[in-house]
Amino acid sequence: MTLGYEEAVGSLHAIDPAWPRPAVLDVLEAPENRHLLDFVQEDPFGAHVFPGNVPGSPSEFLRDLDAQLAAPSGPIHLWSYIPTCAYRCRFCQYPVVLVKGKMEKAADWVDLNIAEAKLWLDAVPHLGGAEVGEFNVFGGTPSLLPEPEIRRLLEFYRANFGFTADTTIRFEGDPSTFTPAKLELLRELGCTKLSSGVQSFDDHVLGLCGREHTAQMCVDFVRNARSAGFEWVSIDLMYGLLDQTLDSVRRDLDVVLENEVTAIVCTKLHLASYSDTRTGVTGEKPAAWQLPSYRDKLVRDGHRWPTLGEQYQMRELLTEGLRAAGYTEHPTMYFARDGLGPEKWKSIMVDQDKQEAEVAIGLGGSSSCRASEAITDVNSRRYTETVNAGRIPLGSATRFTPEAQEARAVKMALTTLQPVRDSLHRQRFPGRSLFAEPWLGKFRSLAARGLVRLGPDVVELTPAGEVLVEAIITTEL
Image (cartoon, rainbow, N blue to C red):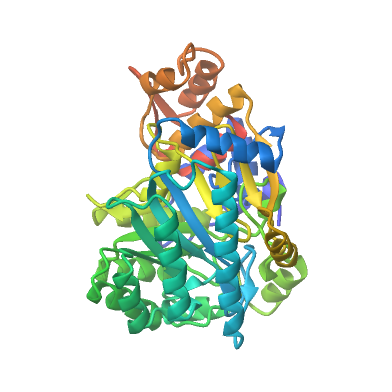
């Protein structure tokens, strides 16, 4: 729900007095940063999909991708999206297919995913030979798949794509579905990374989200995965959830540190539709919590949404607590224990010296190369019909002008929270510099407001700039 400016400032000032006041509030309430406050209070999801700025077509995207893969380049990020879920969370906007009690439907989605992958291999001749840096099986809840289907999926990808000894394989799922047998199978198949959307270790908060697992199941998942020998066990935490408090978030952090979780992704609850700005892949219907009538009813029933000020307190609590415990943030809100990060798949896509291609196979996948990007159809019926007809089911595609390619590169580099180097920028974009227009004026403005620092060869975010990086790259760059 979008607030008026005065209401947004009031929500920003409404903090939990038992916890420190985040310094970023001073930045957000400054008149010269009103556009940043407008952005954060409107609640969009940023830094996930970078849409092109001119119309394109699926065929153009496939040609652009093949051209990039034909040239010398680094390893790509490959992912397989399995949309099956046992239930739909009340905050979930992604395209999912419910299969509870109908596990034969899960096998159908493996069939479709493999069939689509074969279409990609035929249409993009250099894809099969491209080195895969990291392969992710995401969802949905792919861990719902029966063990034979997991084996069939992973063995297909290993046999048909450019996996090497350096390729890492990551598998995502609900914490309650990683049975000992599945953990053993995943290790056998070469998977070294597991990821799970825990969201919270507070059973009350989990119940309101519609999650059907308990906090103890989440702890058991982490411990069982570590005992099974997985070198990387990642969880997602969310803040800003219904009835969530600073004390609850502090307990989440304590559980993470007590169990020495390898990596943590901290995500703010988003109630605005991703499709409004096309900065995230969204499904065909809104999440339950996106419906104003439902949100209002929850408040009438005595529940409470955290204020903007409390959300930034939660963010600071998690960020400062993880950093103090020896975790490094790279990219924004992705934390890994020192010496183990950054997240390999994100690094492949956004680090200034990489920014390689991403190929996403499955319902609602988001794929990109330097010249264009595309999103796979999110309508499950249409997706199925298109794959069965022998066509790659890309639902939309856009291209980048040369200026937009440069802007996208700078934006992605900033989300890493690492210094952005002009020397690297000039290598990639001959004749261009971060210390010449159009960039110099933008960065001087940000520096004057305490959001970046300019030094020899580098542009570096300040602590306030790191917190607001998504707002900065969306509204100012």
